[in-house]
Amino acid sequence: MNASTLDTRLIDTRIDAIARMRWRKWRNRALVYGLLAALVAWSVYVIVIADTDWARLAGASLLKTLGRFMEFDVALLPDLVDPSIDTALMATLASLLGLVLALPVAWLGAANITPLGKASYVFGRGLMTLSRSVHEIVWGLIFVSAVGLGALAGVLAMAVRSVGFISKIIAEAIEDVHPGPIEAIRAVGGNKLQVLLYGIVPQVVPVVIGTVIFEWDINIRRSTIMGLVGAGGLGLVLFRQMAMFNYGGIATVILAVLLLILLGEVISHYARKAVL
Amino acid sequence: MAHALQVRDLRAGYAGREILKGVSFDVAPDDFFAIIGPSGAGKSTLIRCVNRLVEPTGGEVLLDGRNLLSLGQHHLREARRHIGMIFQEFNLIERLSVLDNVLTGRLGYTGTLRSVLRRFTRDDIGKALSMLDRVGLRDHVHKRADRLSGGQRQRVGIARALMQDPRLLLVDEPTSSLDPKIAREVMGLIREVAAELRVPVLCNIHDVKLACEFCTRVIGLQDGVKRFEGPPARLDERAMHDIYALELL
Image (tube, rainbow over all chains, first blue to last red):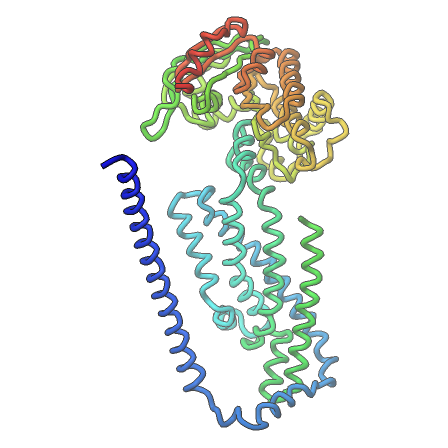
């Protein structure tokens, strides 16, 4: 047996091994996709096919309902100005309050600066999860029972709901800061607070501002449904129109919400540009 | 007053791996020490052990006769005030102005409230302006640090170190992020300001030619052990082989 046949055999066994590996990979992938497809089919059957009133969808009934939404209630428009302003103000207040509450949470939940090691880190991360895992409507119900019906309950609910997102993004930005400036501030004899203020804060300021602007945008949307728990603004008008089955009125309010969010998009676009 | 640094049997390492295996040398007030050696020899660790950005595991570091390794956190910060450091990647705070970056050199002398409000004293601001003049950045005082070129940024780093009224300058690969021409300018500037203030310099540098041109004394480090110490003129082929040999084999 000479060297070259040995080489050929060696290569052959390696190729075989690679081929087997690829087949296994393909088979596993096919299995996963197959399971996913089965899950989708099952969901579609349970939720759509079995649960829908098909008789209602047939014929002109659907179009007729949609048509009723198209009859905008123009008379409602003057009554929407004040609630729109309320909604925007609620969102602004909630976002700023959310930021104030989020800063200490981010400090606790950033692994590299958390003050008491693992304990405070887990506590901070726990607060973030708590804030995000409870729906704003549920937060709203909690605050309505605490401070009564009205915009204050809505603002508090949205603020608390904002904390999770804002603090999580800030904490992650803190964990990702460039270590160079921190080293420099330590080298000049800076203490922990000075390292935080000069080494870390300037690096995360753009993230903080960008995140709050984004959260403000989300809170405008949120505040439209805070009407459910009796908070003021467009949400309250929306639910009144729904209670009266005034489809045109509902469509008008939704249109106002859409305009407000578009306005928010425009403002946040320029705000972002101005500060970064 | 002239300042001097003594390093005695300095050891450092982590996770059971020794990075510095007992390094000793004396830096006189007028010395410009260059530390050369292959990557991973422990040059950067050595520099950072002096101001304890890396905590040594043994030995002594005496600055003006005081052992820095026995200081508690509070006194260590006081000692660091007087040790200027210049970094390879400049380590500037990118979003702050050139002036604010230079002023951070005074943080060790600045109280908490003034730090929070970023209110430095008039004296500090005057000092910062004159330092920026000294390093040739008079026209860039109010620019953001991230708007400057590499060479200019390193000059900000030098001005920041000078703000500390340093008794020692630690310099970590000051030219690795710069092109050859700018690198020589920066090395020249560091040598000039160190001579003006009569502070000793301890400088990591992997460019042997540049090291020999600017320093008064060379230390050759290899695998955490000092293989050579002497004036650049004595750094002949045999010494070079000694420092870099294992790398080649």
